[in-house]
Image 1 (cartoon, rainbow, N blue to C red):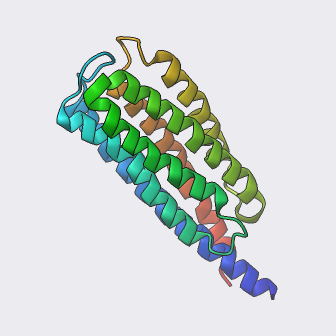
Image 2: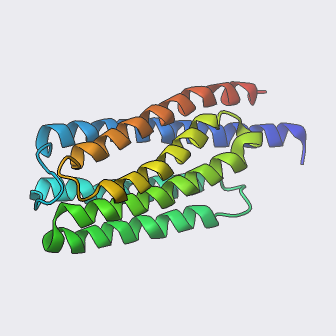
Image 3: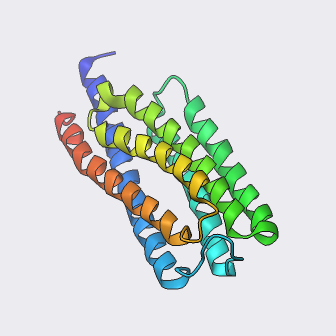
Length: 196
């Protein structure tokens, strides 16, 4: 394979990921705004409103959708196993939340969210480390993945605290959006470098 085709492939992947990351930022911003405007009163120990429940379930489902686009953006990758693991855990988290929300309220749902955030962050961290040589611009994703792992553990620990609620998870989403934005901007350099 020629150097031009390799460079072109990297540029195409970087371009696709950059677009995906900008979309992820937009989704997170909208989700955070909706949480603070429609579900800010949803706290641990309570039974959340239908809107709060939908917002909680939608988040991992969106991550599953975004992961499918991540796979499409990285067709040349030899292994898609990390993304498939993320998809399985995302779908499992959404189903688990649908089950526990009517029975136990927000507390067990936050625990489920914490487990999902831990696994999703670990996958993100692994992928970022694997992609750093080919694409560059992955240090923000490494930081974001690491923070997601830590946040997941924190959510599990704090799930029963009366101060923990949907706005806590919104803070997690906002931080993630920031790192996706930084990566998307940084990937512009990889896109420009790959141009013939």
